[in-house]
Image (cartoon, rainbow, N blue to C red):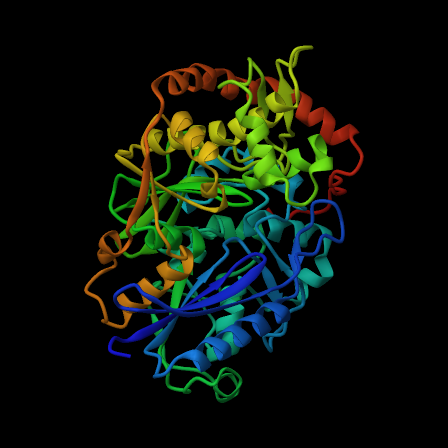
Length: 512
């Protein structure tokens, strides 16, 4: 191999993948291993940390074994908002609670309603939402007080993997900025947030920059992975900010949009900031790059639901036929709006209350209208996130999009129409794993700056909005937005009355 190779390790929600890249951005080898997401109770979403660690080790061993030469270093990406409680020896006492875990919905709503709720959001960059570790910690303190008292350290999944691999208990500013526990201006644990959570700074990992290089692997980790013990290990960052880097959206004004099972929209900025209404998050990438944006819970999962609920006869391979069905309906679905909150919702309202709804249904609507309205709802929700990104004072001059939805010409066009801007689709790269590798290359001095990402990522296609369709979606967007506020009382009543939703916990002594 003529150029140095860095392994990008992407610890995702449902799988870990390791991809080997050279400094020219070429992918040389890759491997992925999946693991289950358990839901033992409604609203819970947890994982076995050991299975994730085993997946990381297997991926590293497999990829390293496929390369003809040495590896210059490892660099990590991780799903954000995870939480694990450890005993004094670093052994997990809890599962890994993922971003999708909503057991702390009642705690989050209570914290948001406090006078300091929005202030906390602005100061920590993290919305007060059950996805975040802060409300999860309050849930443990209230619902599992004996377990809570036994925990020596609270960490994220990447923190624990790095502890097992290197022996260092650290967390990077990117992951920490998504906990609701770190002051994003001071880059230090926030005293008020810690008090609300009922923990001390000593129970959290040491804060480090995303480009911090750990000195190597433990003897056991080196033996398990087949990598040299002295290989440099770059701490890395969260998958959201690194997805921007992997798409080349690292300069201010360039937005990265993704629709997979869920969805997100993020823009890189040079200084941390949250809009006055708290519609966006603000997470770190490097010391002089942050990402502002919002994530939505309901992306491709909405199309999957439409197939199961509206066209079950199409079977498992229904995506193309469903999209063809949606294409038969007009833009705007004949006046039918769907709020696609099948898995509750995040940005820009950051509440676990909402539920899905069709509004405007008439005798004349058919399946094609319902399917198209579901897809339009996802795109309209992303349009609301884009509006919040702008409201935070950010210029938006380019949008780059990726994700499974990009296979569909209909959905590509619909997104451009709903956003009212051209959307550019990069070719090839693996998003967060490529971003992790690039960050590692900068940390190891193999590239001058992560700015090279903008040149390494090639644009495969640019979709321009259709003027008539864009005008229709622009006219519908205020109605779509107003429906959320109008239905909040209904959402509250449904949470109280509908079976199968996470029950509100019995109030106990609070650490607040």
